[in-house]
Structures are given as C-alpha cells and as structure tokens.
Image (cartoon, rainbow, N blue to C red; front, side, top):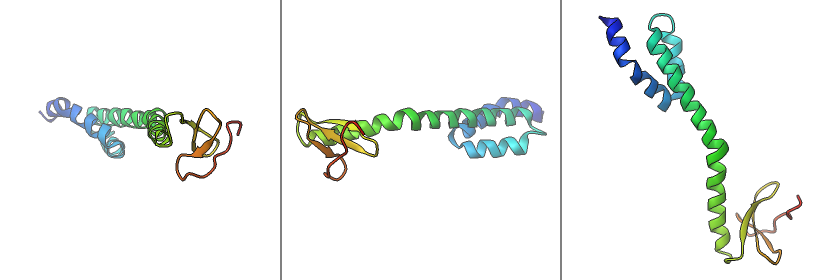
Length: 112
C-alpha cells in the first residue's frame, strides 16, 4: 500500500524541488535508496528550477536592467538612449553627450 501512495503523490515532490531546489536535492539524497520515485521527482523538479533560475539571470535580468536604464535616460530627455559601457549603464544623446545613468557622472565612450 505504501508503494501505491508513494507513486500517487510523487508529483508533489517535483513541485517542492522546483520551488526550493536545495530541498529537492536534499530529499533526493535522503530518498535515493528507499523511495526511488519520490527521489527522482524531487531531483527533476530541482533541476528544472535551477535551469529556469539560470536562464532568468542570463536573459531576463539584463533585459530588466536595460528597461530600467532606458526609463532613467528618458528623464534626461527624449533623445537619450541607454547603452552598456564596459563597466556600467550610460545614456547617450544624438549630439554625443554621455551621462552615467546611475549617478550623473561622465561615462566612458562607446569605444571602451
């Protein structure tokens, strides 16, 4: 009977692993020898959760940063547009004036 209960509720552990990957990994280590299906579902959820977090940090976060800086550049005027210099985000207008989007100091040029 316990094997049937384990197989019916194993999807719950994939959700737990997805939402809290470190807990999914710990559950996998604990259950790997005696509750194979629960262990498998928890590690699958953890792997998917970690993969989506990495994808967000690589793709989503830079897009959010650019949107925030674009909004900041618009406060200097319509003609300012955001670009990423070597070290920080800057705003540049059509006349070549460059402003640091964070603290209004002078930004490095496009070439850096």
